[in-house]
Structures are given as C-alpha cells and as structure tokens.
Amino acid sequence: MGQKAHPIGNRLGIIKGWDSNWFGGNHYADKLVEDEKIRKYLSARINKGGVSKVVIERTLKRITVTIHTARPGIVIGKGGAEVDKIKEELKKLTKKEVQINIFEIKRPELDAQLVAEGIAKQLEARISFRRAMKTTIASTMRMGAEGIKVMTSGRLGGAEMARSEQYKEGRIPLHTFRADIDYALSEALTTYGKIGVKVWICKGEVYGKRDLSPNIGGTSSASGKGGRPEGATAGFGGRDGGRGGNDRGGDRRGGGGNDRNKGGNNRGGGPNRPGGQGGSRPGGGNRPGGPGKR
Image (tube, rainbow, N blue to C red; front, side, top):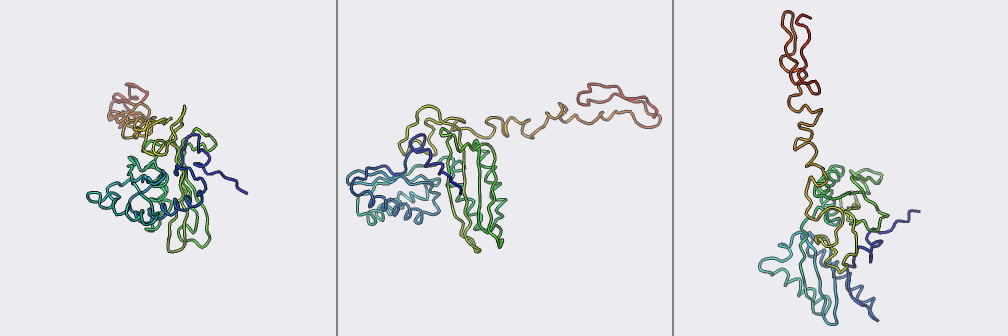
C-alpha cells in the first residue's frame, strides 16, 4: 500500500501556515462545515478568477475571507461592484458579518493550484496531455522554480484503459521539511471521464524561522524565502541566461562560434591551387593549409 503524506499537511507548523485561522471551542464542527461551504461557493462563483486559495479568519462576530487570486480585476469588478455582491451572498450563506480581502498572486506559474487548473482546462479543450504537461513544466522552470513534477491519471488521450503518466524537471525533495513545496490536485471533466492532475512545485528551501500567519507565508510574499530570490527570472543559476548567450551555445561550441568553418574559405584544394591559410579553425589557430597539389 502506498502511504503518502500530503506535502502541505506534512509541513504545517514548520514552514507552512493554516488556511483556516480560528479557535473552534464547542462549535468546531459547525465552523469547519461553514468554511468548506464558503470555499466551495467561491470556487464555483469565481471559477474564471484564477483563485488559488481562500484563507478564512474568524473573530466573535466577523469572518474575514482573503482570496488569493491571479486576476484581481475579475474578482473586484468595476468599481468594486463584484466584491460587494460576493460579500452580500456570503452574508446570506453564513448569517454573519463578512469582510473580503483580495491578495494578488504576482507569478501564477509558481502556484501549484493555478498550474494544475491550467493543465486541466487544456485537457478539457482537447489538447494533448503530453504537450500540456511539457509546456507547463517549461514555463514554471523559466519563472525560477527549483523543480516541478506533474502527474496526470485517467483515460489519457481517450484510451480504453486508465493509466498514469508523470514528467518532472529539477528537484522535488519531498522528505526535506524545509523545502518549500507547493502541491495541488485538480480534475479535468472530459467527455471520456475525469482526468486527475497533480502538481508539485519546489520553490527553494526556507532557512530560519518563517512567519506562519496565513497571508505572509503565502504565494507572492517574499518573507523567509530560501533558495532562489522571489524576483528571480529566467537565467537565475544559469538556466537560459548564462548558457552560451541567447542562442544557446553561440560562441561557446569549441570556442569557434561563427568562425567554425573547418579551415575557412582558403582551405587548400583543387589540382593546381596553392593551399592557403587554414582559416580560423577552432583550436587550430592559423594552421597552414596542406600542399598545393593533391
């Protein structure tokens, strides 16, 4: 039997904070069910808003809901009209005072939930699962992730027999507690059944004590972040940037670059042609050409 720990649950209280912050008391079960209702409602209500997670905090009479989203404009609406509507709807649902905060995710490519949902949407649009997985992995690594693993399971490509396929790049140390690993599961509802998408993203390692308050140890906050700096772009650690210039191996190959024309144009040749200089052949300097006549 596979006994796998949830990567986020495994790190709770160490480098990850909780998504629900309140003391339950005698009504713990009711509050837990209410939290689940709020999350389900919001994910259905703003399904195109790129919602990564919903953090819920409670005081005696008020519920504070923080929505982490990649598209704050869609959630807020014109002049905040959409937020006010959602506020009223949540008041009816919970029968309590509700305050809504919007937290923008600056780099959605590094958020496992958004990456998983992106792949699921592509699968629903009948894009090849391999292509969807590989392009996603490339874009996440380009944004400076330390590693990513993507797994899809189900009737892949409409096959009769369900199976699982996974691709990974970089490192994903699941047993290292200080490794900041984001994990998410999403489902694609295709015409031939559900396809599950799991995503693990490693964003580096966290050294020292991290603030676990829900909106600080989050996706687009830089506090306590180990490994790559939060603003790291492509080329950090020499991925695309330092690898032989932009044209990946431009002048690097054998030190020859564009002059690597095996002996140049003056290489000694035909019957009565004198053998000229050997051009700038890599490693050869100005090697004189062979004898004139072959």
